[in-house]
Structure formats: structure tokens, C-alpha cells
Image 1 (cartoon, rainbow, N blue to C red):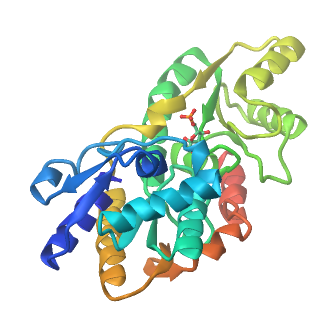
Image 2 (image 1 turned 180 degrees about the vertical axis):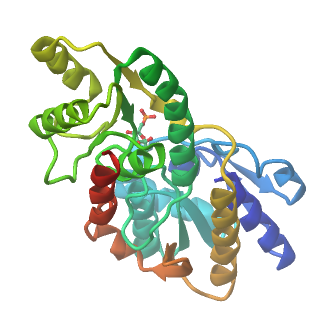
Length: 308
Ligand code: F6P
């Protein structure tokens, strides 16, 4: 996200447009918690995780009167347009502000879950994925040396994008994720037994936090009580949400930050950016209500084949 902030500020600067940074998202709009951001304020932030502007969930934004007041505050401060970085909640909030009060809004996809319609990537996903893979590579050493099964739970809320991609990249023996039609506890047992019969003495099972089996601890309890296995659970948790962003996240953050400002300066009023097949694209905010993208079926099938 810092790459996007830096690019937006510096692109605006190059066009002689002043920028305010709004702290804590919509909460900062409600509280008028904004300050000028200059190109110099954005030095040395490209390699930092998180966001220099902080973030917050803002329940008050659901109230029309609160949005009306914020729009008036923005107009009073001479603000013409907003760049909003976030996921579906942030884009819905931006769409409302634009539709109800005519404030121009551009959205930049920012969530580790990579579950937004209209884009095949979101800022943070690649970094979270690489973090999960590096962690599991380390776990693999113990799994292998002690001949154990590890259940590793990854984030993603209701999406299996992180889980399926992690499974491929760390060579997991199985992956459980919410959108899967084939998986589930019984299928996992079948897979682990088949692996054992083929001579596998250790396994990594990647479990998406939103999987219907109820998470890694629940599966572990069941496996332990039914099969008396020597297994361990690791919940990677917020480790996946921090740390220095990957090059790809920095590059897309930079491209989207710059593009958002250029399009707003050219008079576009309501859109969010995305990437489709490697190309930068724009979407109307209404696209956010389309069905969420599922992890590619081929990738999930490949994880099964490669687990042999
Ligand atoms: O949506 C991003 C995400 O990291 C999810 O993957 C996860 O379920 C959630 O946010 C965690 O949110 P919090 O930090 O509020 O617990």
C-alpha cells in the first residue's frame, strides 16, 4: 500500500496537484484526520509493510448523515477527488460517496485475500503468499525429520486463493479451502492414507482459515482422536499481513497509484483499478458486487497431482 501512496503523491506532485493523506481510512474522513502529504514525506516508504496512513474499520460510514458531513468537509477543504486503497468494503464506501455527493473516487485493490472481482491481483497478496511459502519451507524441515503431519492454517477470510497458491508453491500434500467441491475431512483422510501407502512419512496440509471443516485445530483434534497420529498445527496468522512487500506488490502499487491520479486529473470520476492477464484495467465500482473470483480449478487439481 505504501508503494501506491508514494506513487499517487509523486504523480500528483508532477502534475502540480496537492495531496492530503487521510489517516485511518473512512474514520479519518469522519474525524477530518488529514494532513498534507508531499513527495518528501513519501521517502523510504516503498519497502515498508502495512500503510503509513494506518487503517481502521469505520462503522459510522454506514450512516448517510456521516457521509454527507464528510463530503461537505472535503468540499470545504477544496478536495476534488479521493484515492481509496482497500477491498470490497472500502470500494462500496467510495461508490456511495461518489454517487450521493459527487466526490470523484478511484479505488486501488488492497487486500491479501486476492478475492476482488475485476482484478486478478490485489496489493499484499503476493507478499502474503511468499511469506506463507517461506514459513512452510521451514516447517517442512521438522515435518520431514520427525516424520510428522503438519496442518498449516493460512489467512484469506472466505477465500482459498492464498491456500491453493501456497499449496502449489510449497509442494503441500493436501489443501483444504472453502470453494473446493472435492475436499473435506474424508477426502483428506483418503489422501493422507494414499500418501502413506506410497511411502510418504511426512505431510504438509494447507488449511484455509475459511474452510468448512472449521480450521486446522478442529481437523487436528479429529485426526488425533481417530488415528492417534503425531501431528502439529501451525496457524500463520498475522505474520502474513506484514513485512517488506515483494517486488510485484511494489510494482503494481506504483502503477496503480500513478494511474489513479492520472485518470482523476483527466476527469474520470468513479472507477477502481485492476489487472487482467497482466494488463492494467479499470472497473466501475458496481463490479465489486459480482461474484468473488475462485481459486483456479486447474491449480487446485494440479496441487493434487503434484502431491504424489
Ligand atoms: O481480509 C484480510 C484479512 O487478513 C483476512 O485474511 C483475515 O481473515 C482478516 O483480514 C484478519 O483481520 P483482523 O486483523 O481484523 O483479525
